[in-house]
Length: 262
Ligand SMILES: [Ca+2]
Ligand SMILES: [Ca+2]
Ligand SMILES: [Ca+2]
Ligand SMILES: [Ca+2]
Image: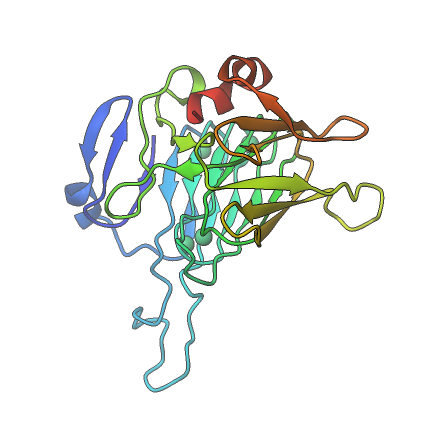
């Protein structure tokens, strides 16, 4: 398992609590390009390519940075890839990858582009993460909207997991209690490059907050319009629509998603 992270961050994984400060102190400065191994990796965006990077930022010039963008390549293996701030580009590679573009809490830019590649991949979005794109690639891929659990430093919490993510742990998210709901529009066959724009509506205002585009994604999980329940859309159906599902049904539809959501 590989780690890329900011100094001092603690990860909770299946193998226990790992304090990474010592290990990171010995590693070179982390650039915006983060490459995993062909094993199971946990990679956090460095959020370090910004105006505070004195190698990038020319004195007296306007902003020369990538505004916290990271380019993350998980390579093979069952990875957990987390972009953090900025409009990140994240590639899962082969294996069952869990990809989070944020979390950004509404800070901008926050439009992440995520590729699942081969394997059964999951992309997780949280309120405040902005409008994004998820291209699933081959396999059974799922887009999930929910309140991703974070620590006090805004880092998604990874909890012990079983199966293919026993080495990395998995993030968790409250989908049932999310403060909004989703709609989908089917634009397959229109030559747009993506197949579904999903819109997230804030329940209290009824306003659209974001639109997430998908291509080669088979499943979508969100929250019911009234709240308090999970909805699911089968994107392989001729006329996909959201229907209510129990957690037991989620487990049958997608065991990896069931490990993540509640
Ligand atoms: Ca990997
Ligand atoms: Ca980032
Ligand atoms: Ca991001
Ligand atoms: Ca993958």
